[in-house]
Image 1: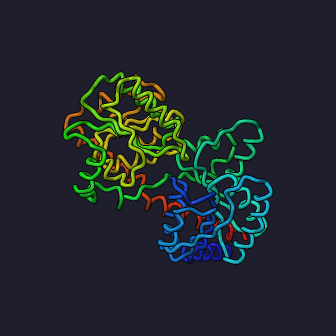
Image 2 (image 1 turned 135 degrees about the horizontal axis):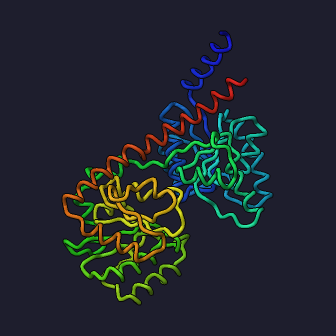
Image 3 (image 1 turned 135 degrees about the vertical axis):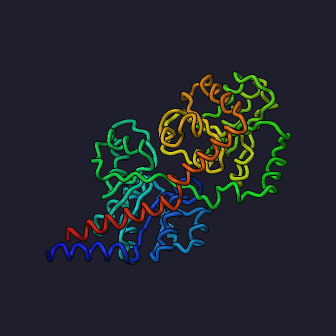
Length: 398
């Protein structure tokens, strides 16, 4: 009786008291890893706790401070073994000075420092597994394995959870699947004004009444822009426009020139436009009649799919990775064979030929499913619950 009462007290204490969590990631420049870290830090603050993020800095640090969270700059982006070793003591000092409950690593190089800092200080260590990571030689697999060493391992999709078990033989009970979340206060058709949509159409010089095919994503080969261009050549329609939206990967422009050469080779210059970075994706998505996610490598999640669904847009996605969890074929979109231009062209024909009534049915189902399963609120709640569960287990054992 006494032990049960003591355990209940432990669980109640962990469930109610504020938490201090330190997340560690390379930098705060751009991307889903960074956005997820900021969302969780803000959720901790809103819950009365402290959200601390350690990184090498970047423009998104402003988003952290605006949310009431804290940023500490350290060279945790470095893969240099000597810097990683120094970061162990730096992080251990920060853990003690800030009474950190949990250290949460989101990338491999900083995870090694965080792992040993957690061992030195006795705090709990959590990782989020954001991708499959290239395996390469045995040493590379060992380097990646730090992301499986958390007391809890958060997988951002069922696909990633299976990958962790199959590749690293991690026990399934240590893995928690928490899908990445979309902010539905931002991706909400009702909150996008006509003026924003008109401005976007004007900036991109889009003619009225022309079906728009859109592929959002960084200009990098595995995102499948080349597959889409080849599919458009097979589609043989000159009454559509295709917008390839995204900036060159890490400032490289060679791939963008390669894409433009492919457009010219297929005489698609009047149809395909490589428009670069977009700072108002909700308005951009409202212009699209179909959103394409043509990745040739399996994606760990695919945030753009859910963002498009939240805006009521039908999606055509590659049939592998987490896309299978996000798209219900024939209900919220279609899946096409990865890297197969003919398969993609066939799926585009189906989508472009939808009646207005069918399009509205798909939009309603897509919005509903996105809200039910992939909200930022659900992601934050599940992550904070994982933190508390881990601490409760630790204290109950003590």
